[in-house]
Every structure is written in C-alpha cells, then in structure tokens.
Image (cartoon, rainbow, N blue to C red; front, side):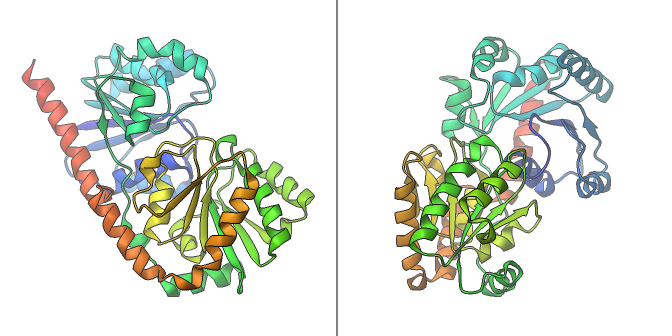
Length: 370
C-alpha cells in the first residue's frame, strides 16, 4: 500500500502536524510506504525520522505559484503510483491538492477537516462545489469540523488521538521543569499555540496585564513561535509585563512543560478540536478556553468556556481557579481525565489501527468494483 500524506499548513510545531505525526509514529508501517508533501523545509529531526522509516518528503510551496504546485503534485502522484492520498487542511481550498489526484485517478482520495472556519472564506465558498466532486472519502477531527467543511454530507470522525502516558501528571517532572522556568512559587499560566491571529495572543496579554494588577505572583508561559511573535514581545514590553512572560518558542517537551503549569488558557478566535486540549486535560490542568472553541473538546467536563469580548471575565476566572489549586489532587484528576479520554476514543495506538483499517477497507472496496 502506497500512501501520500499532504499537509496544507506548514509542517512544524502546530496542531495538524502533531496529528499527522501521532498517526504516522503509531501506525504499523510494515506493509506500507508513507510519503509526504509539505509546504516548507522540515527540521533535521523530522528528516531523520522519515529517513529511518524509508519515507520520502517532498517540499512544494503551495502559496507560491499555484499552477507550478498543481503540476508538480500531479507528477509526484503519477511517478509514485500511490493508492491513497490523505490531505489535511481547514477548507475546500484542499481542491488544489485533491484535483491533481482526481486527474491522476488515484483510487482513494481522502480529505481531512481540522477546523471550524478558515482565513479565506470567499475562496472556500467558490471552491466548495468543485471540491465536493473530487474526493472519495471525507474525515474530520470532530463533528463541528465535519459540518463546517462537508455540510450535510456524510463524513468519518477520526479523533485526534494522543499517547496519554506521555501527559500523565508527574510531580518529579513538574519540579524539574518549574526549575527550568525559574518559576519559584509563582502560579504558571500556560498557552501552547503558534503566534498567529487565530490564537489571539493580543487578548491573552491584555488579560495578563490586568491580572498582574490584582496579583503579581503569576508567570505567563507561551510555547511556540510564529509570524506575530515579535509583535507580541513588543506588546508585552509596552504593557510592562515582559519580565513576567516566558516566550519559550518551539519545543519537543510540551508534555513536560504542561506539568509545570497551573492553569492552561486557550482564547482562540476559532478552533476545531485542538489536540493540545486533549493533552492539557490528560495532564490534569484546570483549563479556560474561548467560547469559539468546539465544545466537543471538553472530554473531562472540567473545562470552562469564556467570552473573548471580556478580559475581566478571564481575570476573575483565573483568580478563582488559582485560589483553589492547593485543594486539587492533580494526580487524581489526571488519572480520571485520561480514563475519560481513552473511553472517548482518543488513544492514538487504537486510532492508528483504525486509520489503517480504513485504508485497507477503502482499497478493498475499490478493487472489488474493478
């Protein structure tokens, strides 16, 4: 079986990349060739991992010359004789990726929705009727993400599974990583997400500024990087909170830094079902999220949804949550949440088996109709 996985977003530290890699790393690849098309040069770590698994990674600039991208992707599909193309994205602009596969008669053409809106709504609407004619199967990370992209059409919900063992609360890891942060006895508010408009860092810094006016014993930890990072650093300086914000950048230790946090916040402008919320719940963290995030993400039933029109509401909720931290047995919460997450179908080892079964079933059905 030959599978070409296409990422329509930069292949780096972000939600879609995490999902793709989680499935790739946990899937039995003994009888499979899995290759990749990504829009950017990948890190040396990823290159080494792909090489060790005999995977080829093609870099095609999707946002440059669209016609060139289209023809290069057709050539890759033609030369590679792929049985399956699996495209990960947020909108019907995945037409740019699935149409070449349609023209090359790739038997199984899967599109995979990871969000509940997109940045280019006009193009999404224009492309949608054509997009719907080109794929053979449709996946979504959750019900809301599926309805956003496919409307009333049927789709398969393929959940953003994780290895819960990596996120289970561990007091020793917590102490080690709090030392790295020089957190002392401060309450650590954490956020994981690229510095892009969607993640709403401006709002978060405004919340933090007001929070420190009421209680200065907080540290804000921001994990990842992105095009708006420098702007947010400048904003933190202007607000006078820069010394109490850790701009950590990208890290492979997200699971460990979650242990060091006391509260997790995600004030996004929109989200499908972000894998980081599954991770944060597994670590037993109290979580505040915007009311624009899919309610499906609240697997533990312990998350609080707040309006992103009211900074004071976020400040009050952070103060209330952190006043009760010492009353919470985080290890107990973590174990309870992990059980709920596994029961809800978010165990990556099981989900990787399910995805491979889908691949096999789709191919078997196709061959039976030849």
